[in-house]
Image (cartoon, rainbow, N blue to C red; front, side):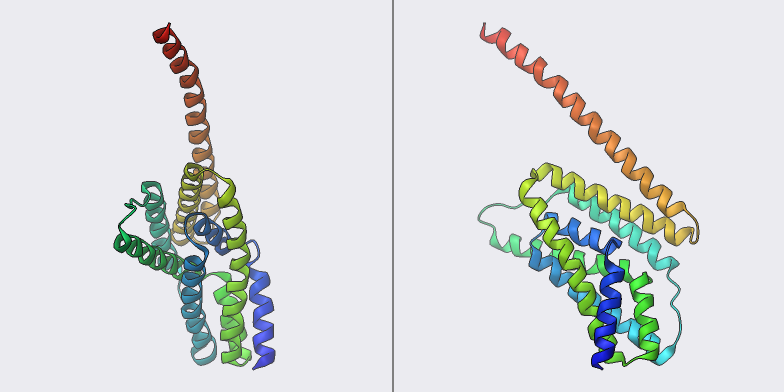
Length: 233
């Protein structure tokens, strides 16, 4: 079991480096506290990898993932809209604060659960469980993925301390939109470049829109200052 645990940890940790799950973890870490993000990731990963080892060890079957990918894409677009809307809290509303925390935890766990179903790490876990101790594979793959995503959470938390709240909000929303569109087209048009092209298009459009907003605001500031000086004079 120990050898299966160690092998699974290394394989999944390396597979997660640069994966969309790390980008997701970083994005969530920009908006929510690290322990909420890591908790949601751990719950989702534990469930997904339990299914993976069951499939690999007991069934030996592959899971069709196109529909799941499309649903995950739609969910990520919803998360993006939710991020743009923001969370409205009063200072003395502790009950509402706990409700938002619970909602964030559920959203994070659901997002990772949908995104990881059919991902390469899940398929790798299925393959490992077919030839190795399933308990060791389950524990090792879960810890490996959480450890890799924890690195991204640290990076996201550090960035969150040095970026304005509005920039974080829009940046996180754009990332969710990119993930959502890519996952949707990955499910609707599997085996094509549609996911990559659509994700790149959303990123390019978002960057152009952000640049336009920045230019417009900079042009309005001198005009407003000039109007203020005229009124004072």
